[in-house]
Length: 92
Figure 1 (cartoon, one colour):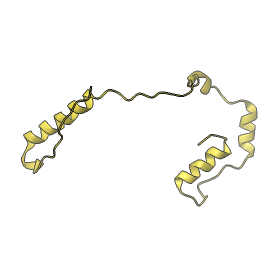
Figure 2 (figure 1 turned 60 degrees about the vertical axis):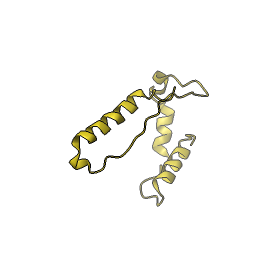
Figure 3 (figure 1 turned 30 degrees about the horizontal axis):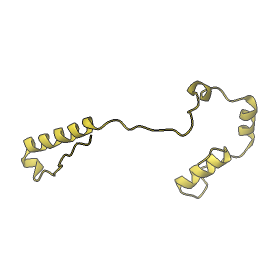
Figure 4 (figure 1 turned 90 degrees about the horizontal axis):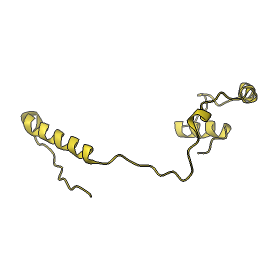
């Protein structure tokens, strides 16, 4: 099932364009021979149409009234995303 390919580097690639092209083609062949990644979900995925529905007015009103974090919050990006997701009750 697995294909074993020896991948090597091309020394002095600027002086060996044919060898470089052959190397590039071997990498392309390697990627084309790989099967696409598969994901096995533990739960069924929600219906996309349902996810794309407009929020109820009550949620819109709540979002207008609460103070969401701004870029002025002195934290790194990962922490900022965690804070925003927590405020919106999105599991992380």
